[in-house]
Structures are given as structure tokens and as C-alpha cells.
Image 1 (cartoon, helix red, strand yellow):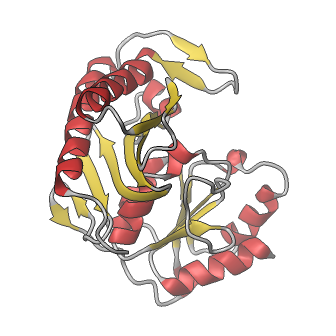
Image 2 (spheres, rainbow, N blue to C red):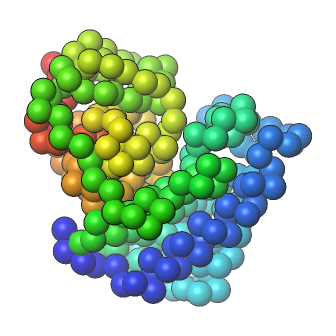
Amino acid sequence: MTETCPAHLVALAQRLADSSASVIRRYFRTPFSIDDKADASPVTIADREAERIIRTIIEAQRPDDGIYGEEHGTKNLDAEWVWVIDPIDGTKSFIAGRPIFGTLIALLRHGRPVLGVIDQPIVGDRWVGVAGRPTTHNGQTVRVRPCPGGLAASMFGTTSPDLFPGGDYEAYRRVAAQVKTSAYGGDCYTYGLLASGYYDLVVESGLKLYDFAALVPVVTGAGGLMTDWQGNPLDANSTGQVVAAGDPRTHREALAALAG
């Protein structure tokens, strides 16, 4: 992947993460109301306020850019640069007081992810992936680990088996039956851990653009692979069936298991 994201935009993404983190830390493990969205997923004041502060900064600094946010909608999606925001990816974990959620900030150029930030504001973990550069974790370069044994030797993660709809569940089961070890939960946090060499494989289904756009530069910049279930690159038009793997063999074997 060639360099396509200027340094000043990377710096802006870091500022956005800093600003949203200050909001989220105020609410973590404090009393707050929980609302249900139309799809029955929960949302809190922290989700809404964190996205609002991110959008306010973008609109002031980059008024011509597009924005695709989970909580406050979309604008100018035909722009060359589009920011994609998930203020709290893993709201259920946030509500439960578990610090394994994250803020996702991505930047698309012509519909392709070129910048991604995974920020865990409680633990203090931040992964930054930029097209054409190595991924960093808290400023230090990270790398996926080799898994010479492929699927049979892999540490496998997914948020929950309950999140695979219809026939996707059977595909998930074919993968899960072949891995060495499974660990569930974590939402975006698991992808950061894969980039740092702790997981070998993550498979999920039903993700929205704001769930996966920031993850792509983080995983690929660490030497991993991240595609849809057919092995195609992920972009603004992808369906939300994703595979992230630390090495080509594990990725190839996971795709074969998903296909049946």
C-alpha cells in the first residue's frame, strides 16, 4: 500500500482520539442512562458526546471532508476524504465496566481506508495505522506474529458467536472447530492485539463501515491481512464479513473453512 495520508491528517486523528478519550473517561464506571437504538443495540451519553466532540473538531478543521458517524449520521460522503467514527466500539463492555472497548477513527480516501486509530482510553492503549507506514502501539512499531502451523495452531478471536446471523454461524463454526485456542469479546481491541502479535486470527460478520474501517490500516500496517470472506480488500462498499490474520497461511485456511 502506498503512502496516501499526509502527516497533518495523522496528527489530527490523534487529536480527535485525545478529545474523545477525555469525554469517555468521565463516564466510565459512573451512573448513566442507557438507551436502545432501532436495532436494539445500546447507546449511552458517552457514545453521543464522544462522537459530537470529534465531529466538531473535524468540521472546524476540515469543513469540506465527509463524515460517517455511528451516532450522528453522515454528511458529504462523496468527498475525497471521509472520516469514519465509532465513538465506543464495544458499548456493552463499556456499560459493564470492562476496559476492552475502543474508539475507532478512520479516514477514507476515495472510499479506501488509509488511516486508522484504535484508542482504548482507560487502559491507555492506542494503535495507529497509516497506509505505507508501520503500525504503532503507543508510538512503538508493532508486528503480527508468525503462525507456521496455520489454523490448527492459531489463537482465534471473535466478539461473540451470537453475532453471526443465519448461515454465517455455520461458517464460523467450521473455523472455530479447526483452531487451537479461542478467546471471545473485545470488539476492536482484539484487532489491536492481533497487530501486536497476541492473536493470529479474527473472524466476524455483520460489521458496519464504522466497525471495520479503522482496523484495516492497523492490521495491514503490522504485516497482517484483512479482507472480506472472499479474500477481497475492504472498502466503503464491503458487506461486513471480515477476516483478519497475522500470516498468509492462516488467512488462506480461514477463507477455505468459511467457504466450506
